[in-house]
Structure formats: structure tokens, C-alpha cells
Amino acid sequence: MNIVKHVLALALAAAMLFMGLQKFGAENIVFGTIAQNTGISFFEPNFRMLTGVLEVLAGLLMFHPRTRGAGALFATGIVAGAVVFHLSPWLGTKVALAAGAEPTYQLFIMAIVFLVLALINLALNRQTVPVIGSRFIDSKS
Image 1 (tube, helix red, strand yellow):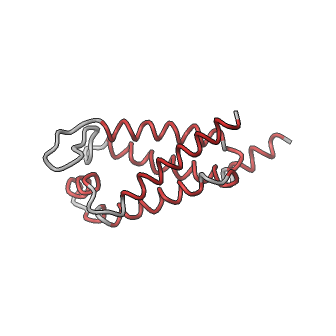
Image 2 (cartoon, one colour):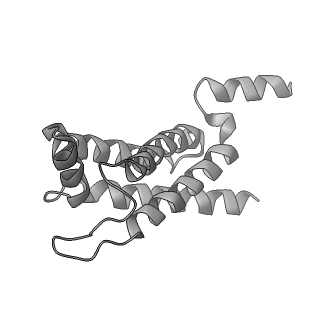
């Protein structure tokens, strides 16, 4: 079970780092779409950059066993937010990955898969979740 726990943690770390680092490049179609549909320019580039920083932080926290609970908690929150935006009228579940491209469910499916992975990691590392984790540890004594 220990090897599975490490592999799942590294998989979530890789996913968060991959997605987070992409946020520091050029304008992102997802955040641009949200900004356009809401009329709030903060989403592109400010919210995109903030999301990228949080995703990278979550990914880095997943590398050390003592901080995996915090990393999984951050990742769960971030990816849950992505799912909420996909379910909103501002983004939708079908998104074109590039200007002029046919919209697909690819990003929504990725968000669901990453959310499940984050929730599994959160459950497996619940003892290291800040504040909540200490209650789990104390209740076992």
C-alpha cells in the first residue's frame, strides 16, 4: 500500500506542476473565455497567474510525506474550483483548446480525473492535513 500511496502522490504532483507551469506562458483560452463571459478582466491574466502559483505550490507539497496532506488539500480546492467553472455558464464542459478549434470535453474530463486523484490523495494522507489531520491522529490514541 505504501508504494501505491507514493505513486499516487507523485502522479498528483506531476499533474499539478504540469498544469501550473502552463499558466505562466501566453494568454490561456480558458481564463480568457471566463474573463470574456463574466466581463471581469481579473481572470486573465491575474487569476490565471494566481492559479498557476497555487498549482505549483500544491505540486511541490506532494513530494514530501509530511506535507502531502496540505498539498492534497490545496489540489482538491483548486481542481474543485476548475470543475465548478466548467459547470458554470461562463466556461462550460465543452471548451475549444485553441481559437477556431472544435470544442471538446477534454479539459472537463481532465478536471474530473484530477479531482478524483486529489481526493484519493487527501484520504490517503489525511493524517498530515493541517488542523484536521491532528484530530485524526489524536482520535486513534
